[in-house]
Length: 324
Image 1 (cartoon, rainbow, N blue to C red):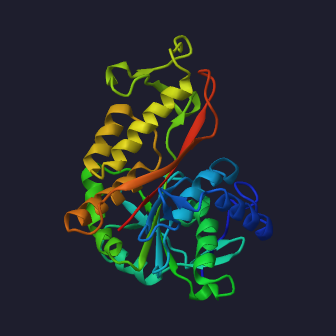
Image 2 (spheres, rainbow, N blue to C red):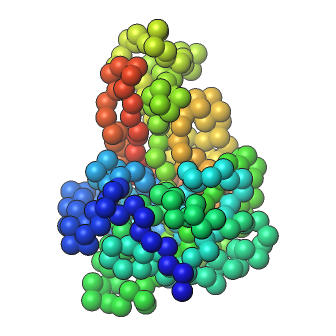
């Protein structure tokens, strides 16, 4: 059996299972037990968006999505993330049979992987790229923790829901809709849960993105800050929040084309925009069939730091769920 190692343990998150478990428990405990008077997990919230940075940065934000996540009927978990390690068009599937975590290994649903592969629309993730990629791995400890809580801490992990890791590449809006059609039957099945892996705005010279917008109602005010021209009426971090708020609002409409349009206008550096786009299109399609409202609901927004100067940088994180 081919098991992918937990390559980011002891760097992006703690590799000691006891320390890691305590950290996840602490993050989850800091999330309220109810959101808008609804007890967590949210019934039917089988789909979440959560960040994938190091846990010291994005772990607390991710906990909001994971605490809302409903796994009560799940038999498999699809994990969709962007590729950071190689340029990908289309989508790609893992070659591994299991993914290791500091707690133990999560089994890959190789049968579902093969069914997806048989569509002819998926490539295989190169082994070295799979090992190096963090967008999928960073969710696995949280998935383990929530499966343990749902199935019982004394239950046998080999009986837990399996995972379906998928990388979604740099695709057009129309291509995202085609992948949405492939995944829609799985999304419609209440035995499937989904994690969409994404950070939001990557701001700073090191990310080649320094756009600033003061007023969300006036897109003509969108400008790129430079080292010679970076004076703003409000702090730069407020302009970053405006850009993220517009992207989040576009996602919350449940209309895939609105999100694509937002990114075309702002060029916001949402690294998981394509996985989000695929799931948005799938949710939108199901909503037209009367299955769910097709909309993500965001419950948390954080940033790695508050940018004050053009030389500063930050990454934004957001947590959301969708009921299907």
